[in-house]
Length: 457
Image (cartoon, rainbow, N blue to C red; front, top):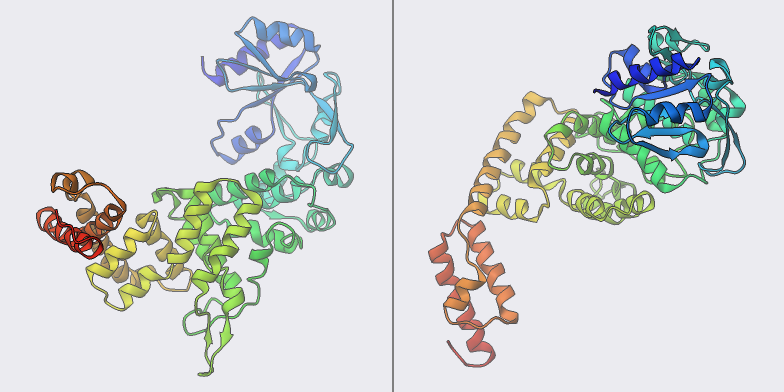
């Protein structure tokens, strides 16, 4: 039985018990927008919690992951099944709410606790009727995000980020009244993982993630959680290379270009964060040199600790932080080597330094297009880089010298092994075949042994 079939079965049993079951929240919103949404939320009105648990127990193994809040599930289904409730904030944190379950509260009061009108929509599961007490359907049609109620909305500071996230995902606009409410809210009590969660949705689901930051900028809400990004505003760039304007504009354009490439990435989230962080170092390195020109020498390396500080504040994901630091440091080199007509040796060494050479090339494309370079103009550079990358992949895939080879050649494992294998790896990158690489590595080790102890195997 599919989730939708199960939802209808629940609704029929609820109706027989004297109640009504509704689809609610994001599922109804996305249904009306013609978007797919696998997260199906159901709200059951007009029967007691005991009656609901009795119904669910006849349909399979019930799981009560929020029983005190009236939230239930079925182990063989991904449905979230809830009873209507009211909420009251008792503290500044996201979890500081007192929830009161009330299955007879009615659809108006139940919808009133939602954050935005487009999320306050309900649909009768059996009749298909849309319940819209607050003009959510019209706001959907007009592409607007409007908060429900000043006091209730302000009780949950995460809604500021959710509003920006929805604006970026749906390419909607927050109405001025909602922006004003968001401007007055204090986000300091938010848990870092909640901030990361909303940012991740914007980066991974929005066609133009720049809208997330643009809306936060409208709200004056960048400074607390995204000060490194806010610092990019008004940092100048040489117009010759960056007709798009300051580093903020450039970064936002690169972010949107990266979004068009993320489905091709080996680590999509890492690519998106790398695009966001790639020029953070320009804030501290941009200066007017003696030649009268703007330069940001060393911004690639200067950006690494800044990116690390930013990411560490909202995430403990070591893989992500390591990946972003690596791509930030290397982001300039592919296009620079291509412009210099560098040979295969230099390009192979660069790709070998990258944790994901393929994603580094995607970031390089986004960086170029985010500087106003047309796809047609960039195609020659991209083709050159792809050719060098194909050579790199072929060389890395070729048989290589191993520690066993060196032992078979008569050497004992020791501190020199690491250096010898690094030497062999460089030979492999240079295109030296395994036989000749082994001979040269053996000679390397013999010289090392002779220099250190005079003993030659």
